[in-house]
Each structure stands twice: as C-alpha cells, then as structure tokens.
Length: 108
Image 1 (spheres, rainbow, N blue to C red):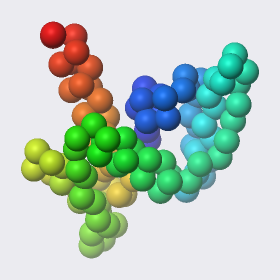
Image 2 (cartoon, helix red, strand yellow; image 1 turned 90 degrees about the horizontal axis):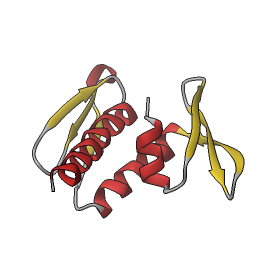
Image 3 (cartoon, one colour; image 1 turned 135 degrees about the vertical axis):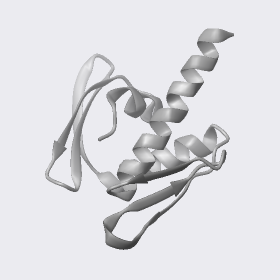
Image 4 (cartoon, helix red, strand yellow; image 1 turned 30 degrees about the horizontal axis):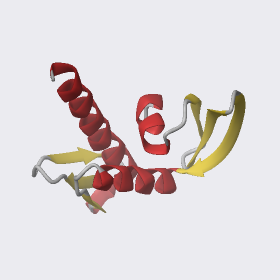
C-alpha cells in the first residue's frame, strides 16, 4: 500500500486519505483549493507515477513481475527488493527514497 506521504510527494497536493478499493484500485482524496476532491486510480497508474517521480529525482527503477507472482525491483543504487506485486515493490522502494531524501534534508 502506498503511504499518504509518498502520494503527496508524487502528486504535489495535500492528500487527505488513500483507501484501497478491491485489489486493483485506490480512492485518492486530496485537498485542492480547500475543497476535498476524490478520484479512483488504478494501482498500476499510481506505481507508474511513482516511477516517474523517482526518475525526476535522479533515480531509475527497473521492475518486473517474476515467477510465482513475486515482483523484483532494482533501483539505481543496485538495491534489490522483492514484494508480492510489482506495484508494492515500487511503492516500497519509492517510500525508501522519500525517507532518505527527508533524512538528508534534516541533516543539512
């Protein structure tokens, strides 16, 4: 599952809530000009937006769905990640990138 913090960084809007809808979709509620708006977003579209966010931050993410439904992912720093699904692997790696970015900002 993607965190509200990561969704805010990716979409650059204040996220009010993220709620999974079934296995393939999320209901994303965000605040736009002091009005809460909601939209359904497919988890693959959301994962792709996260990959674009990482790329714009100078990171390349290579991911694939492997055998037996296990997703493999390799980041630019050659860190490997295995998750049950490809989107979950992307969300987890992007969350780590976000936390590292925040840590670097706080130590400077």
